Length: 178
Ligand code: AMP
Image (cartoon, rainbow, N blue to C red; front, side, top):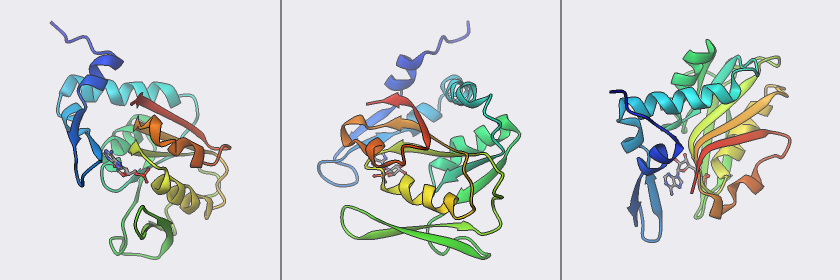
């Protein structure tokens, strides 16, 4: 018999790890959702359904967990896949964007020839927490003069209000909320 999957099944499949990587953080471990074939397939299909009429030409995945569903989605849209990576990983000419963390700064990079101004872009990451990472990713995409940007998360931590930091002109949708 085929397993019936719904949003509740998906939510319950995400493992919570208290105090990881440091005390006070409740880490949402998506590997337990992705390791189940039926659930992984359902997640990719649901996100695809949400965006299927938008004409997406490029899907951007943010290193590293954003690469997993990002490449699944790119394939479903027959779109190109573009990695946004941590510093020093991309071999050719890059744009670079720093952003503030709880303590200190971090940087994200993209190849300067990855996108064109007329691309319709979906930026995907596994999880929205405080919004710093996605803010930097949107700034990188803006460097290409692109106006049609969609943002998707598999999981959003509502209580951290990261959504309030995202440019309101960018359409954002998360599949699962905690
Ligand atoms: P932020 O920039 O605060 O929105 O953090 C988002 C990034 O950090 C994502 O790429 C997540 O993979 C990771 N992250 C932050 N907080 C958590 C958490 N509680 N559980 C799992 N991943 C997290």
